Length: 266
Length: 307
Ligand SMILES: Nc1ncnc2c1ncn2[C@@H]1O[C@H](COP(=O)(O)OP(=O)(O)O)[C@@H](O)[C@H]1O
Ligand SMILES: [Mg+2]
Image 1: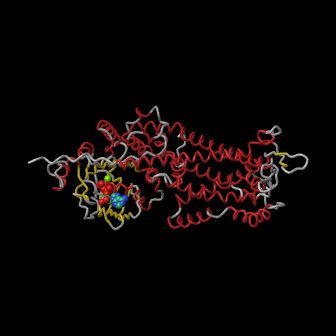
Image 2: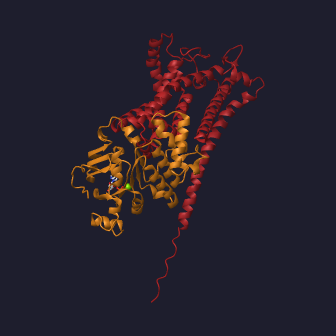
Image 3: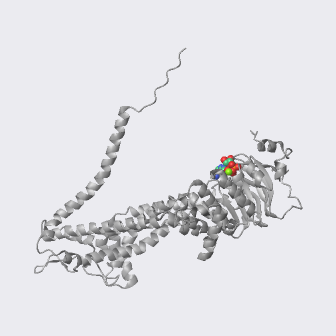
């Protein structure tokens, strides 16, 4: 069990090399501290499930990883985040860092561009100009996000005109378009129907072979289905981080975890 | 024991409904009145001009495309406005060539790149600029910029197309900046953040997301700037030197349609041909601005359809 209030160094021999190392991360919005010094690793090619009630700081934690927390005026971060050994607060190129970490927000924000341009946006910003390559990439990403069949005939129409669920898949395609090494999904299935959710879950299982995934979810069963390890966050602290089968077993490391997972929380 | 009588379904009073329909009528009236006013203005201007249009020796082709403007010639009166039209276009085009890049650039800087304190200060300065009356601009054109123009280019006279264009640009920039900045600020921050989260630089956010998203508002900003430049009278009258001919270079003096009306209407006897032709010039000006607006409207629609 990892306890948020303790700041012990990570164990010496992790199962796989750590992609992301978070050490004593603290975050406050103005005077209000909402993450109280958490430490954890994300291993290469795992799916790390993050569960916990609303307001636990799950989304805020994700935003610290790719430094999009900087957009929030008054947000202060302490502690360190290393991605592939590089301290994100000292990175030379924050744009490259953000391309390395794909981010899917709970409420989809389609850019006011065409469907094609939405997906081609990040590659273009990274300097990709070749039309054929872009075409192939756009198709590949839209297929991965289980959206291709629905939009292949209208790639030139506005992305913001899609339905909520389609826009969410568009943002997933977009997050995959810059070939991230880590993909963070924040409650991605809120606006998607169960069938599509299942299709995307299958895609995530496929993707695990290539990339590392952090899956923040309000559906504990989704974490159970997909995650290799699961982290339970509560009030800005990590209550427990362990193998998913342990977290969902009858004897998790913490009584609170059992309560939350079994739905008698609060 | 009796069950409490169900409360009646709430309904709005007659008075409330009457008030609402009254309000609706008023709003409709004010909308319609805008159209009525425009038509009325057109009608009265055209009525002053009509007798000369329908007289036998009036030649519309010559009026539009002859460069000979001799309204007070004793032997052979000629009313050709082409040089005036060209003068208006030349000065406006130059003004826009200067004002649009500066104005849009400043709008982008204000809305996307500068800090809050600096932005507030700059906005106040820009509002002050747009509050300067046009006769003051004319005065500046006559005494300040015309000398600069002479110093910089060695032109014989400082009151010319260049001088007029510069002053009109100075007058249009504040409009373009403030409306353009509003248009950019109206783009939701969520777009900026989504784009930045995808690894875009701030400049990439501007030209890949904000400019397309705000294009209608930006186009409106440019057009209001054009409108100010085309319709401006006092400042160009003082700035451009007032010679009726087609300018061969930026350093030639010209006269614009507006300045011509302002300069001559006072001298033309009421009811004379000259007087009526000047009103007809007003109608021509009206048509030009109308055409500009329609083209702009079509352009916006075209952009929208492609988008
Ligand atoms: N932009 C913000 N400004 C101020 N407080 C915020 C902001 N975003 C989140 N918070 C606060 O931070 C805490 C954690 O929120 P969040 O990270 O969204 O949790 P979760 O994603 O687990 O629901 C909450 O108390 C929330 O009110
Ligand atoms: Mg959240």
